[in-house]
Amino acid sequence: MTDPHVDTARVNTRQPEADALVLFGATGDLAKRKLFPSLYRLEKSGALHVPVIGVARSDWDTAAFREHTRESILQHIPDADPAVIDSLCASMELVQGDYSDPETWNSLRSALDSHNSLTAVFYMAIPPTMFPMVAKKLASVDLHHRGRVVVEKPFGRDLGTAIELNKTLHEVFHEDHIFRIDHYLGKEAVEDLLVFRFANTLIEPVWNRNYVRSVQVTMSETIDVEGRGSFYDSVGAIRDVLQNHLLQVVALLAMEPPAGADSGFLQDEKAKVIAAMRPIDPEALVRGQYVGYRDEPGVDPESATETFVAARLEIDSWRWAGVPWYVRVGKALPQTATEAMIELRKPPRMLFDEAGGPAPDRNLIRLRLGKNDGVTFALQAKTPGPELDSQEVHVGVDFAAALGERQDAYERLLGDALIGSLRRFARQDIVEGTWRVVQPALDNPGPILPYFKDSWGPTDADDILVDGDRWFSPTPVPEP
Ligand code: BG6
Image (cartoon, rainbow, N blue to C red; front, side, top):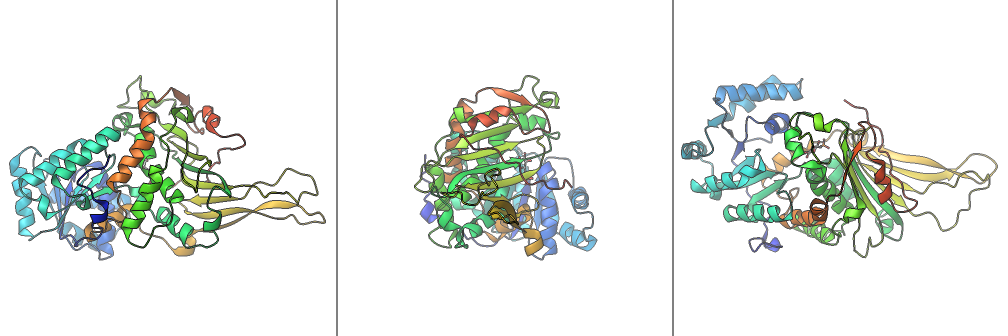
């Protein structure tokens, strides 16, 4: 499974700062929704010091590209400062041409030469099928020695194609010049999992099979496929988010403490815990599709693509053996949230039940990783009155209120790519490990079950729960 090009010990996690940003797919959707607003924020904070060179097939010139950038920013940040947009736009230019035309690549090279660029970031905001071709074209004009490449997920469609894609990229770029974006790794609350676990003496002693009964990670969205039907139908929830965002979150929740602060140690621990995950048992997985999905534009009317998946994972490590890990993701569900719920075992004896009501609930740790991020502990406290009884109380913190607003994930990751920090990017062995975990679900997906929009998916998802376990609804968050 490992590639001879990747000697993880040799991977250089910190590299020279970039002197140019090249954006492939500059007129596309990702650039518009995520990259231009992030560039604006970087410009505003003074962190963007490099020219931005868009590459696109669209018949545009630099003026049209700048105008498009301006509009995209204003659409996402209505109160954006016009002076900041102006200075960003002034640093932008467009190389227009067909990717198959050698002239396009010569023009790109000339553009980089004109800025004396030796270390560019080549950002591939293009369909993954184009990654190998673009990598080879960069090599054809000798630009592969003059920068690093940022690639967007999905990295392959399964374990075999992921290995193949990596092999092709490694023919052109060394592993430490490949920055694989998983935007969940750029989220503050996701990164906070490390701090929460390893900077709090209170947490770590109970974070294991002796005290934890189950762990549950839910990523639910109220939106449906929102016009992305033709893309989504070829992907589905397992490939779109379970293999990447969700398993990265699981790895951060389950891994052992890194041996040191160097980011290579963090990646090593993630790789180890993913290696300890059993490949998903198709019997412990339920796939659903919301009613109406097949009528979405671009979707096959007989599609068997899942828009919902729930699965039970097992981690064969000393820390987690025997603890069920549940993951659940879906579109058109009642709430938008990403939450990890840790349910602790009950105390060995229940003493505080004099009034004889329902047994107190077990302690819960609810980690909110999406909007309104924070953490809430569900604890027991004495019910006021003469009897010794307990009831649930919530002790929580909203991170935004306590710590202030934080950077957006794309802004952070783009900034990291520019300064040359690999810490928040996905390493090859980890990507391949996560594909290995989901592979049985791809090989043997089982039936697709319908569910109504605004429900929590097919009720069969309850069947994968171990006796006495339940699905927890995430904390409601106000829709924008
Ligand atoms: C993307 C998926 O990676 O993540 C989308 O392709 C999904 O389908 C999105 O909607 C969710 O990201 P976030 O940051 O809104 O939770």
